[in-house]
Amino acid sequence: MKLFFAGISLLSLFATQLSAQVKLGESVVETSQAIKVHVTSPTPELQSLAVQAFNSHGRYQAVAAGAAYEVKFTLVSPTQVRVEALRGTASVVNESVSGRDARQALLKGADLVVEKTNGLGLKGFFTAQLAFIQDLGKGKEVCTGDLFFGAVVRQTQDNAAALFPRWAPDGNRLIYTSFYRSGFPDIYVIDLASRRRDLLVHFKGTNQGARFSPSGGQIAMVLSGEGNPEIYVGTAQGTNVEARTRLSGAVKSSPAFSPDGSQIIFAGEPGPQLYVMPNTKYGAPRQVSPRGFAQYSAEPDWSRTDPNKVVFTARVNGAYRIAVLNLAAGQAKVVEMQNAPFDAKEPSWLADGRHVIYTAVARSGETRVAILDTETGKSTPVSATSLGSVKQASVYYGR
Figure 1 (tube, one colour):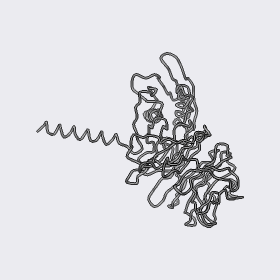
Figure 2 (cartoon, helix red, strand yellow):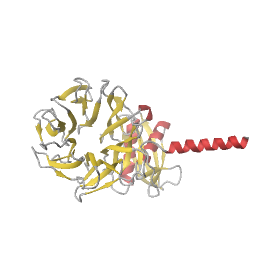
Figure 3 (cartoon, rainbow, N blue to C red):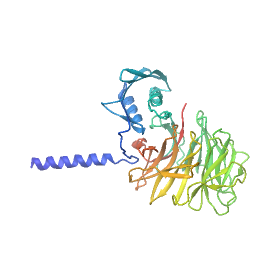
């Protein structure tokens, strides 16, 4: 009888471990090529954060032994951390780093370690700030926080649907669509310092999909006031709004500017597929998603580090996946995620031009935000389960 119960206990433990291995937004990949780091930090909270950060990076793995680098964080003050990285006895990093608090200072220090040790010339991305939507049932609210969902602030409390918050390039404002005042989709802007919110675009029909240009001087958006949804561009103050497309019967969505602001990429029907056009009135769009690659190509985000790279959502073999488009070569590839049992949508580039933040969607409809390495397919969930369903994260690269 004791053996029987011991067996049941072991089976239960195995089932629990197996269940724990399958997380929404997680895709485990071979780590033999990863740079192994042993991390020590002054508090349990900072230790957990440092390990989480390095383990979210496709180039790194935090280990207890056998590390290539010893990384030590020491608390200097409530807003300052000293970071040291050793390769054997050779010092690679030895600096004090300041932030708004110890958490941000540690992430800045971790970025320094990445930049000094990755060997590929990659920038760090751990200090990114996120804007995202938290689904609270009755309302979908705009929130902000750091990349690992610390210091989360709910920016709206409207008990209404909000959609796709996007950062201004200076990190001081957010633009998004909400139904809260008129019951129709209008475009609003939030000043994050004052918490002031202003109605920016309110035309007849739908007003949505707004995004700032890289300079911050313009916004692109989708308006339907004159019939079909079309791409429009106006000033950052919502004035001088003029059409960029006039494509009869073709629905347009999710416009994004090129890094220099001279072009706009968007999704258009049929399909949808991806098109690029000049940022001029009635510029001629050309399809850039490869024909026959995917039956659905949408939600593009143009890399700020490589003008030839676009990340987007593709539907391939019945599943939504993250794909990367090489504009120069006219080729696209799906990021392989080991047949992950969830959909992947709404990608947004991180600062190194290799990783993206995206929404993982379970069959139940639950959503979670995760980091994806577009080179290896390693995916790591980062949104806290205590927040419930979160989605539509966009990235500010941080200051």
